[in-house]
Image (tube, rainbow, N blue to C red; front, side):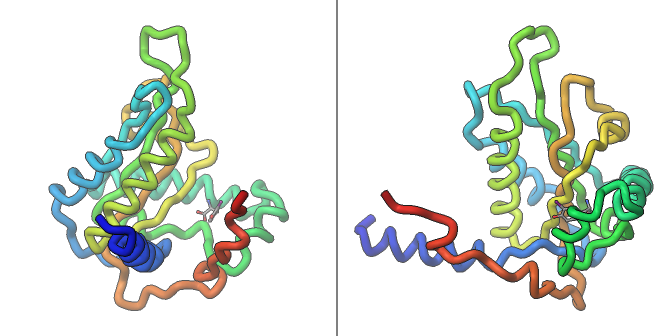
Length: 207
Ligand code: IYR
């Protein structure tokens, strides 16, 4: 590539990825499992501490699994919005319009739960940089899904150990993110507060 080509590809990618926004209003339109598989393979190509690849993606699509997830998440979120989350948290979330009501967990065709593998079953040495590695992998997953024309939402479970039971994952794995995947509903909107992006001079310093 020439320098000009490089810059123009980087700029084109910026435009493409900057059009991704978190979606909280999904349609039930199906998405082929092959698309989800390819996106998870992309996520699995991420760099990780000591190349331990400390991730596991539990993929939910059956009505039974998604309903069980919604029931458990909403119960936890009712506690959060009922005050357990504290007023500082509620202040930070103002403008995003989030509530404990999460119908999209059932409506969207796919929900991917990213687990971090804290250590191998027989290993006494913990995997290094689990959260960071899984975070990078989730970034690639979101990018791949966006590239495939799909809408996504990252929902962070706290503490959500119930996800191990629900996804039948062992105790050496820790849920890190719930990623809802599908098509945006016709009437989905982006809250003003969510559309704001910090400018380059606020997110970088050049030494
Ligand atoms: N988990 C709650 C609250 C929430 C927390 C964060 I951090 C957000 O970025 C958005 C929402 C919920 O999903 O409603």
